[in-house]
Amino acid sequence: MGLFSLVGTSAQAEAAGTVVHMAQAGSPDDIMPPRKRPRLRVTPYDSPDGVYPRYNPGPDAVRECSVAYVQEHRPSGTVITPHMSCFWRRG
Image (cartoon, rainbow, N blue to C red):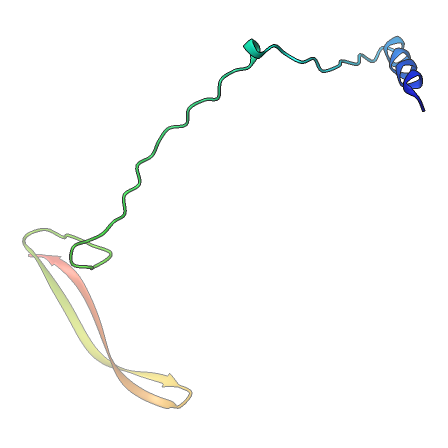
């Protein structure tokens, strides 16, 4: 197929009611400038004493802990290990 057969095909498509549009190069004035993206400030969270995550329950809070020995079933056999769970209570 040559160039003439392509032109003839587009002319036949226009005659059949199908509209063919060709891309046109725009002038440099028609180009929109890129949009500016909002800037986000990212600061690392670094606590002074190295405890993360930090939870501040208030000045009058009391930490209550309960300790119990529980059995753990392991492949080497059953062992007894201490387990501690703590929570903050407002005092």
